[in-house]
Amino acid sequence: MPIVESDWAQLSPVSKSFPTTIASAATIAPTSFYSVLTGNVGVATIVPPVTHAHMLALEFAGTAGVLATGNIKTAVASVVGQVMLLVFNPTTQKYVPAG
Image 1 (cartoon, helix red, strand yellow):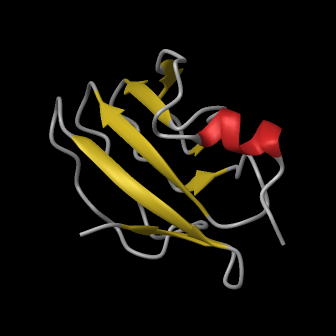
Image 2 (spheres, one colour; image 1 turned 90 degrees about the horizontal axis):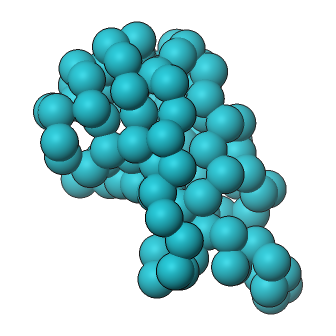
């Protein structure tokens, strides 16, 4: 099944859109491929912007990281200023940190 064009435009890593800034929280809802998270709260759940497989890039401005208590498969500590890639598996409904 092909990806709907609007989904591709929203989540494409080569889109012309700027990163969105989100306050770091237990649950976040990114709306684009690249998001900058402010604050120091660990992310446990990510609300998927689409239901099919996709990847998100999260840049942490603080020392938050991701937790394995929601829909993220593996906990990973963040490094300020580095980007963490997460791949969504629609079968398990979980994000898997890349690397």
